[in-house]
Length: 74
Image 1: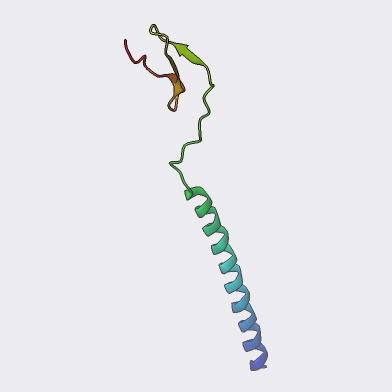
Image 2: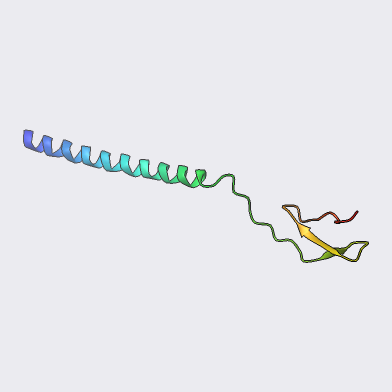
């Protein structure tokens, strides 16, 4: 009878170890997904329209808010 108890406890230990490893991997995967590139900004696509300056030149939109650039000679 002692051999059966040892076998049974060995199986319980193996199953518990596998469960703990699976739980660890699930939480590790979640924490890696949440920590990936938190400060990365989405790319911005500005329209291609232009504003005509008093001297006849043109300025386009740029920057993260797609604002018109300042006129070069004002």
